[in-house]
Amino acid sequence: MPVLVVNVDHVATLRQARMGIEPEPVTAAYMAETAGATGIIVHLREDRRHIQDRDVELIKATCNTRLHLEMAATGEMQSIALKVNPEMVCLVPEKRQELTTEGGLNCIGREQELREFLKPIHDQGIRASLFIDADPAQIEAAAAIGSEFIEIHTGHYADAKDFRDREKELDKILKGIELAQKHDLKVNLGHGLNYRNILAFRNVPGISEYSIGHAIMARAIYVGLDRAVRDMAGLVRTFAD
Image (cartoon, rainbow, N blue to C red; front, top):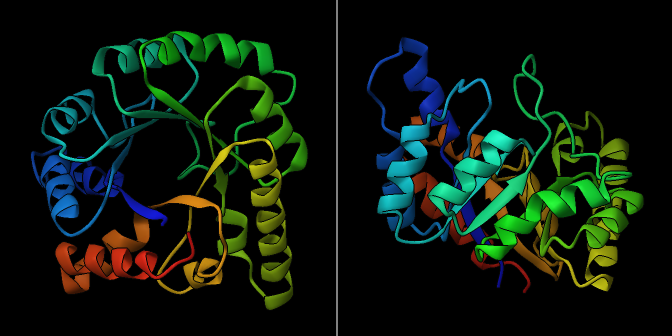
């Protein structure tokens, strides 16, 4: 059965807007876990715009499920991952000027580089995922790199403005899931998923995790974080294995 992992970056975004001490991402992580999340995601960006090193360390020390660390493929981030020892790292592209991650990581032509980057991470027993678009060439490259997981970028599907474009993007994702399974890759989905558009995946087999943050935190403003996570976790529990 697929599971829900909750991204708490936007709790840190709100805190950093005032450069204060609240709200605390570690508290949000605890609440998400008690409401049914089976993992917590944080993205430690190079510019530290939201999640800070302290947040990663605190959540790792107190997390009762699994910590997934999203990060760029840099030497600094590799060192932090090896120090913190999360259950999984997910390599993502990163541009300082972007508001949020705009697309998948380009793996094509970087197979050896990324394989070598992940080697010490794998040697330490940390699982790895690559955040990529549902592009057959990217999926083939991910398989060659030796990552256990891919996370298919669902942002283009979520942002589609009309039915035709939405169905086109959905079809790409569904074909990407099938291709990844043929390469023995485990598949996660994430970016832009909410309480409505996630329903398109209800009967789709072969999805391990749904990575969701913004939609849950936005709903939490109205109904509270406990209920927002419980509602999404309840939806995911109805999905195909």
